[in-house]
Length: 351
Image (cartoon, rainbow, N blue to C red; front, top):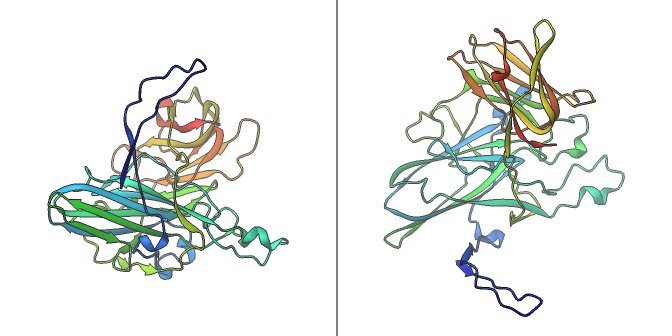
């Protein structure tokens, strides 16, 4: 249901303002029984051992049999997710959804066990897909990150872990002829790993561009080697619409200088503390490994490291999806050529 509203005010002299412009909001899914969708994840054999902290990719091809009047996606992915429609990312949110106390934890190491049991909420978000979908073949794609749900930064402290990444999604399509269609997450979705071999909240991301699967979120992609998703345990927190502001990239920040403190190391000074990450622009041979180490203004690196492995196809641009850092300096290791101020940009905002 779409609800419309407007507002006017009375001041201290009891003067009445004109009415505001009419605004609106939509009612969403209020109860877990409204979803008619299942929590799914990648099979354990897909993300075991060295790929435990890799990002699973999911896809679903559909055929829409009419002109679309309205389309909505309701989705939550834990710890983080990105939604793609026909190859393009939906929305400008990053590190979504916002952190909550999603689920029950592993409690054996908690001195005060009530702390580990404060599980109440899982946020979901709503996407307007009306202009993104078309009559005929379409593809939904979703990438999951570990985030706060499967913390990769402290494997020696299992009490901080919830569980492996998982998602739930419901897509509602209203056709111009009055008919409706619903597509939901279930075990018919297909899943695979990809170029994100590791992602941790602050410890960084390892991205191997050689493993990119071009067109994975588009119709007609050859997914013969992908596996079916598996049904997983639903988090114990209740699904609620996220009304708190999402994270977004608010600024792109250029470095003020680049120096070489040692041979083979390029140090970029961003001129201020940043909460975010760096966007890398570089070229080189296939398989070249570039390491970015992030350092605070007066402190150590705290293990903040991103790694990018080149695919060797001209100039390559990359920034991570599921990590963020607090830093002023970025040290770049492994570059096959001399770097300039053009090779690094800061992404995020002021710290």
